[in-house]
Image 1 (tube, chains in turn green, brown):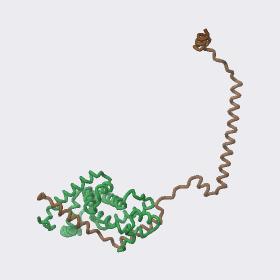
Image 2 (image 1 turned 120 degrees about the vertical axis):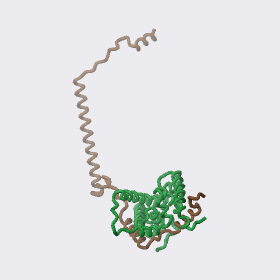
Image 3 (image 1 turned 45 degrees about the horizontal axis):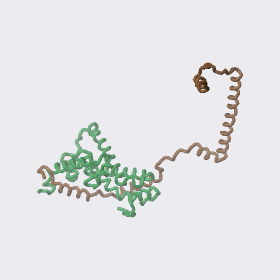
Length: 191
Length: 122
């Protein structure tokens, strides 16, 4: 993978450089943020291809906004997290609609229950537990404990109050602890 | 710690593990993203602002057309003003000929002013 040749340059400055036609600035921004955006999208949607699509689309929006980017107003990372969160929420809602109306009847060559279990086993226990949480809790917990955003930053991303973030992350953590309690042995946490 | 919950330290360890396992960004993905960046830069992000009427005029005929338009506008204003002024004067003179003015004498001789004047005088 290519290296970030402008690693000492801040995101805001990279946005200006890109807006002025410097493609290496785009490369640096992509290298810095793609993995985290993809990680969040993957945790939310559980689909690698969709996660890549979303990360690509989020960056596309970043390129488009670059000429109008106001330095110091928002962090590039927070802005990207917000775009990715909103896109994931939209896709989850669409899927939920499809789940109710459009899911076809199972066919004979559909994956067997055993295959499905195998497929599920590929996901980490944490992923499985995260996916059992309500959408907003999952997002808040991911941003707080995996992406390590501060509560005010999460409030900005999710467009809610800091108190609401605290409530979501606290309930999410407790719910995860309960879900994972049954997996203690498999996780190797016997005490 | 409750028996039906995972220790929070263990949960934090799972989060840390997840944090360290960031997805690998493939070269193919990076290539797609950079192609997008190139394309987005080549196309203007915003539609060009619409030209103002005077900019269009300047673009069409440079300053002579602008000067001609200004001269026509000033001349038109002058004609309009001069003929309307004459018309107003003409109307006023016609009214003056048709009607006379009379002093309003309805207060008579016992207005308050007159009484006060008489009192001061005496």
